[in-house]
Image 1: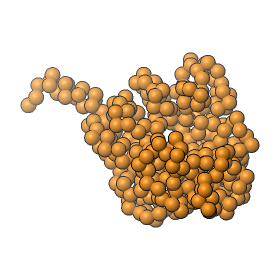
Image 2 (image 1 turned 180 degrees about the vertical axis):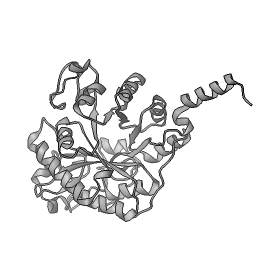
Image 3 (image 1 turned 135 degrees about the horizontal axis):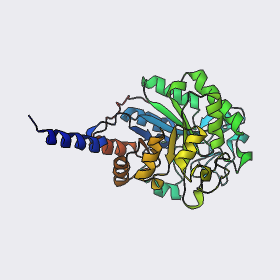
Image 4 (image 1 turned 90 degrees about the horizontal axis):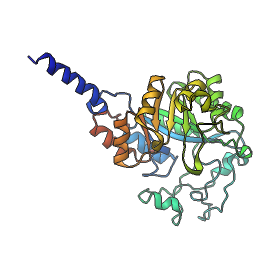
Length: 331
């Protein structure tokens, strides 16, 4: 029989091991845009691949067309690095905003192959092209998940709306109304979280659908910075971190968020602990290198959004994290 000192040491070791012991059964493996390092982003082939390998959450982005259809796309309009006309030529920048295009017009563009000479192509050289891929609707994604038989996978849906470019999308109220209409009519309210850099949309979600968790996206670096510790920005819906001790977790808690979703380079162990003390989950984006995935897990994040969900599964599994089962399906 082990001594009392040995028992205490074992207990402490188990507590410190955390994810390495497989104790974090709720860790969230998210396929960013369906896993764009592998297949065309935000496409049914990519989502089918993610479902087949097994992920906890399909991460995706949505926009709304001129005729009110909710479509799956990271950009607010046609992406010149992805969108090809029927004659095979890529469109010229800038791409037309979806709010100015009907769904049948959007369907005419092939988004199954990255423009070969683009910086985007260099970023994902191993992505397998799927010519003939079209921008899907959110309803089509839900139908694919039903077809797979997967009753557990969740959806992390980002509203692609920019407060600095109001002419390129519907306003927050109308955008959210369209999105919630699809989610509710399709019966997926219990499996969805909604994320955004534009916190205005999250406040609308919290008002209109308080049962749906909201994830507050942030980045604090470079020209992409959306939040500042000493003032409100156009992205933060008048919430000023300086009113909350300069703390982003406390600001997000005050705004009503359930999840803080920062760029992974912006987090520290102390910030993660602070968020957890406030009852917030921390899901970082976008983590694609093995060493960064390992470091984030060791810091104690609750989930990782990755372009390479296959690699994330390997890293998480090696740390003793339970992996979701795959549900093979064809798009």
